[in-house]
Every structure is written in C-alpha cells, then in structure tokens.
Image 1 (spheres, rainbow, N blue to C red):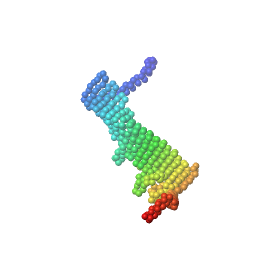
Image 2: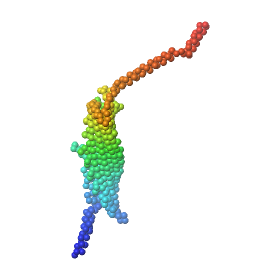
Image 3: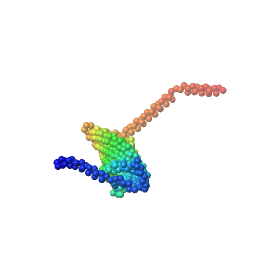
Image 4: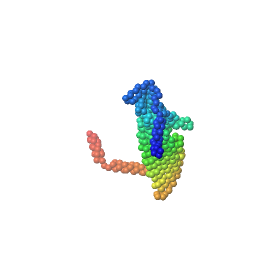
Length: 433
C-alpha cells in the first residue's frame, strides 16, 4: 500500500493541472456564425465564404458584415462590404474588418468610427486596432479622438486630439499621441510632437516643440505639463521646462490701451483661475518685460535669477525680482507722453503696480550681495536739451552759411570785371557812332 500511496501523491499534481486545463478549455467559448444568406466551402484552404447579412458572435461581442472569409483553423474572420463590431461598452464601424478570436483583437479599415455606449468618446480615422481584453484602441492613420463630457448646465465639453498615431486606453481614459499632435479644448489649443493626455486625472504632458495657446496666453518651451481643473474644462496650472517663454496679453478696454507681459527663463510655472492668470514664476536666468500696445518701443524690463509676477483679474498687481536684480520702468503721463524712466539694481526688487493706470505704483530695493542703487532719467529734459542743441546747431549752420555767402560776394570776380569792361566799350562805340 505504501508504494501505491506514494504514486498517487505523485499523480495528484498532474491530475490537478489536467483538470485546470480542461476547465479553461471548457470556458473558452467558440466563435459562432449565427447567420449568412449563402455559404461556400473551400476545403483545401480551410475557409468558408459567407455572403449576405453575415452575423458572428463570440462571448459578449458580435459583428456583422455583407461578405466574410472564415478561417476556421485560425479562428479568424476577414470582412468586407461594411463592418459593424459591437462589444459591451461600445462599437466599431468601418468599410472592412478582421477579427482574430485567439488573441481577441479586431481591426477595422476604411472610414473608421469607434465610440462607446455612454457617448464619452469617438475615434475616427482610416485604420484601427482594438484589443478587447485590455480595451486599448490604436489608430495609426489620420486619427482623431473626440472626448465628450456633459457639464451640469447640459452643455457638452469636447476635447479633440489629432495626430499621425494615437493609442487610447479606454479603461484608464488615457491617450498617447505621436507626430503633429494637436489638442483643442474650448479656447485652448496645444501642439507638440508627442503628447500624453490623462482624462481621468485631468493632466496633459507634451514634449517636442510644444506650444499652448489660450485666449490671452501663449506658452512655449522644451516640455510643457498642464493641469486642468476638477471639471476638466479650464486650465489650472502650467509648468514649462527648459527654454521657457510665456506671453500674457490684455486687450484694450474703454479708453485704456492694451498691455503685453512676457517672461523667459529655464523654468516657468503659471497658475490660473477661471481662465485668468494669477501667478507667474520664472527661475534661472529670468527675464521679463511688459509694455502698453500704444507704446511698444518703451519696454519695462525685469532681469534676475528669479522672477515672481502676481496678477489681479489678469492684470499685473506686483512683482518680485530676486538675485542680481535689475529693472527699467518708464513713467507715462496722462497725455500718453513718456516723461522719464527709473533704472534700479539690487539683490531684490519689489514692485507694486496700479492696475487701473497700468503703471508702477512703488519700487522698493533691497541690497545684499549686490549694492542697491537707482536713478531717474528725465526724458522730457533730455528731449528739451536735444531740441535746444538742434536749434543751436541750425543757428550755427545758418550763420556759417551767411558768412560764406558774404565772403563769396566780397571776393573779386575776374569774369564779372571783364564783362563790365566789355559793356563800357560797347557803350562808348555806340556813342561815337
């Protein structure tokens, strides 16, 4: 009995594996042809040609077409003359299709449209591959992905992604886009070479010549990371890394001119609220300037290791320039003439702005590693002095010209003397006659 027990103990693991394999095989449902108007069998090739209202079912998926080649051994179906593939969470429509049961992958080509039953997304393009197990859609030819979200007011917010290739994970609501990427949402337009969009967590990452444009803002750099608000409909923050450049522009209102603010640096971070900028931070080799659109040649400058700009309702409220800070600000009078400019330098410069007048209210300098210094240049006085110098120059030039003319007139002219003598001779001859 002892040897038999030992043999049984050896056989039990093998029997368990065999039972698992049998169970797995039993659970693998077959690919079933539910309907076709006609059927032709090619035994050598192991295929069936099906035509007219062809209908297949496999587990929870099914697809319909007008013409299909069923490769029974490979358990795959090639469809043409229209292809409608449905699964529990959505559908795929195209001119042609191919379903491979063993790997659970469906492909579609020709005017492809793919969406879900909840109408939360729509895929369009020329070719699509769908992995039914992982719920991943890959579109490598002229793809466009539309993601829809219904707002509380009933309106539909749409995010559109176009590129040369898009991979979309439906489970995670995560999209990857490659080459000539363009993302559009409301007033925001984003372009780059490679983009990653997480709809579930509301963030967008871009690299390869990325740009971000909104109504009054423009961002560029080597890479950009954007965070949307919890509703996913407006920009919450933007991080630009390497060769960062940001532009904020305010349009003219009433009798006030428009304004432009630009910032440059290695890293730029901006925070927004209700599509209005609240804070802009620039680090490493920070440079910035702002000007009013009717006085473009008078640019107020800010340079330092770090630049912090704070805004109120989109208008500059205060600024802090840190680390070898320098600034230049022009004083503009009510008649829009430029009266003078302030030049300042120090370790840190604090600037307060008058949002209504769009002008500097106060300037505070702090020394440290750099001696604080400042000066005011009276540009009106310089202009008066310049005009006085020009007037003196004109007077001197006129006086010199007059002296030259007088000298020329006083100088004997041999030709004139000869003419006078000839004239006298002619008069004398006339008298003698």
